[in-house]
Image (cartoon, rainbow, N blue to C red; front, side, top):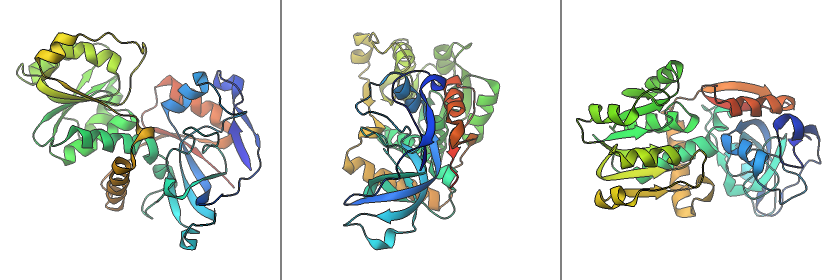
Amino acid sequence: MKAVWYERNGGAKEVLIFGDLPTPQPAENEVRVQLFASGVNPSDVKSRLARPLQDPFIVPHSDGAGIIDAIGQGVDPARLGERVWVWNAQWQRSMGTSAQYVCLPSEQAVHLPDSTSFQEGACMGIPGLTALQAVRIAGDVTKQTVLVTGASSAVGHYVTQMLKRLGANVIGTVGSAAKAAHAKEAGADNCLFYKTDDVVAQVKDLTHGKGVDTIIDMDFSTTISWIAQGILRPHGHLVCYGSNPPLEVPVMFRPLLFNSVTVSFFLVYDLPVQQRGPCVQILNRMLENKQLKHTIGATFALQDTVEAHLTVESGKTIGNVVIDIEH
């Protein structure tokens, strides 16, 4: 099969290889997915750059979508020919979705509604599930004001849509006018430019000095300092799924303690079954009911995966970056 892989850490141009690998065969309780789309996420770039290899080579990307074309022993034969999206394809294993085929446990291949394209399905594993889990952890947000950092990002765009469906008022941070328009199209009520605006002062102005009720956050390194300045109301809730460098972040204890702030972290790759199961069901129900808007910002052929990684690294594209896989 055609695939892209790397054998050492480094820059995309230096380490990504396009070529042929053996077509995998499903083991017991596994399915083989003939992939038509592979989602490229910032975590894929970070892994290629710096995560030590535990295997001779890595076929990157955890997200993808396609059709089950082979099954292992113990899998219902009715699954043959099923359209699916996949999660955690390359999490703690060597074989991801930047290939024509991937084998993985049957439960990691989720039914893809006919109304959802393969490209859109390839955005569900990390962006879709991260957004939904963050919103679920946030709890009842009806009539609350929620700050979404990176509201135009792949995750933030889904978060904003989900919050608005639940009746929240959404303030989003963005990096440009175009990204502000994208966030507002998803339902953001206000957008603040984190590069130039005094975000804390503007949030206080928008909330009449009270601060927001909840923050759904992609950059703990910045947001924790905002909390110390009162951007989050007393008894507020920070839900965090990521951070930019530095990864050793100083935390001011007294503002957290004296304001009884709740801080929740989660890693989408490591969701317990009792959390992931409901997320998958709810997300698929939203797909079936066409309740989510998807934005494919850029597409590339498999042989152009280097350019796809560079596009993700640049951070300039609005929407998800997806590899279209031909057979």
